Structures are given as C-alpha cells and as structure tokens.
Length: 252
Ligand code: NAP
Image (cartoon, helix red, strand yellow):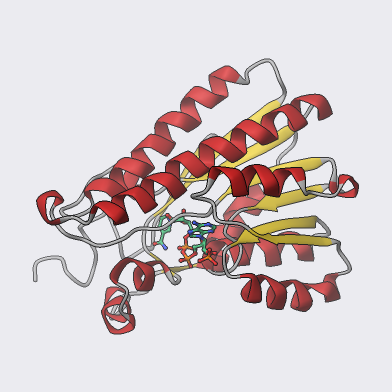
C-alpha cells in the first residue's frame, strides 16, 4: 500500500481523513502548524500498524512547504493521494470592513499553499505514473454569501484550479477531484470568529455534517478503479439546501 499526503491534518476533516485512510492500511504523510496535535493523532493511529510521517508546516509559507516535501522519507513513496485540505476562513465582515491580514492569510493558505504543494507533488506522481489530487473546495466556491467575500473567492479559485489541472494532467494518469461540502462542524467556525460561543451558534438546532462524513466520501472517491475519476462532489447536510437556506433559518 502507498501513502496519502494530507495537509492540515491536526483537526476536522484532515484528521478524520488520517483516521479513515490509516484504518484502511495507507501510510500517512501529515502536516499542520500545531505539532502537538499531530503528535497525539500519530500516537493514536499507531494501532493501525501503518507508517506515519508528520512535520510542522505552515501552508501559507512557501519555504516551509518546499521543506516539507523535500523531507518526506523515500520509504513513503509512492504517494498515491494528495489531499489539499489545509484551509481556513477569517471574519464575516463586508469587504470595506475586512482585515487585510486576514485576507492574506486566507489567500496564502487556501490558494497559494495549494498551488505550491501541488506543483511539487505532480512531478513525483508523473514519475510514478499515477496519483490522485483531491482538493477541498466548498459550497462557498459555488455560491457567495454576505461577508464571505475573500473566503468565497479562495474557494472559487480552487474550483477553477481543479478544472484546469485536470486538463493540464490529461495525459498523465493523475486524477483530480474536488470535494465541496456545505456546513461541517469542525474547528472551522471557531477559527473564523476567534470565538467559541459564536462558533457554537452556527451549528445549533441543525444537524450539520461531521468531519467523518467528508472523510468517508474522500475515501470512496480515492478508491475507485484507476479509469474512474469522480470529478466533483457537492455534499450538504440534509437540513441545508444552499449556503443561505437551511431548515433552522428558513422563513424565520
Ligand atoms: P478545521 O477543523 O479548522 O481544520 C483546518 C485544518 O487546516 C487544521 O488542521 C489546521 O491546522 C489546518 N491549517 C489551517 N491553516 C493552516 C496553515 N497555515 N498551515 C498548515 N495547516 C493549516 O476546519 P475543517 O472544516 O476541517 O477545514 C478543512 C478544509 O475544509 C478547509 O480547506 C475548509 O475551507 C474546508 N471546508 C470546511 C467546511 C466546514 O463547514 N467546516 C465547509 C467547506 C469546506 P493548524 O491550525 O494546526 O495549522
């Protein structure tokens, strides 16, 4: 069995992917900024008898991304799957009220981080003659919402990038997919609002998706036969019809 590289594996969807892939025998290559969390997750997943390589990496920092890829031990090759998961939203202000540092953090992590690591992993996959790049998009890349401005733009960028990448890689046997969820209860809203209470409210009186729901879909997408590429998956909670319409707030 080869390896799966998961960016942003210290919580939420990335962590759930690490768990699902490890349970199914994949070796793990993980990164995130919170090394203590990666350490704990790796310790816990040792029971699955897989090899785990993890490194503290800031996915908004080009040099750290280059360092990370260079330091992947060769025994973790081939790299079967790259899951471009690390990402975040910050704030929900209208653009004129927005914080420029927050914008840079989102653009650097959600877009430039994905570009840099993908650029580095493609030659490895080309050499192998196979590979699968799975991007975490979002429903926010399909529909915008008030205050979503820069976050929505980063996810729309991922949507465009995914399509273009498929064309670039058409002769390489490398698959490219995008997984685009609606509301998933993770640390996402805590990071967005920098406030636990506000974050909690997002998921009150509604049954959101959970990280494991998304990881299961990603595992399914990644384990189809080589000639099958599931290009895009939009996955929503049953109680959410679109970004702004959900069972709790509709007709309020
Ligand atoms: P989460 O629980 O906050 O997890 C985000 C992960 O990304 C963490 O492991 C975090 O690790 C990592 N990360 C963030 N900035 C990073 C950086 N600069 N360098 C390295 N790692 C970084 O949120 P999540 O919901 O699982 O989000 C995962 C992906 O799903 C994101 O791309 C998000 O946009 C997308 N998504 C989420 C939802 C949702 O409703 N939750 C919906 C659609 C799409 P560290 O903080 O330790 O670095």
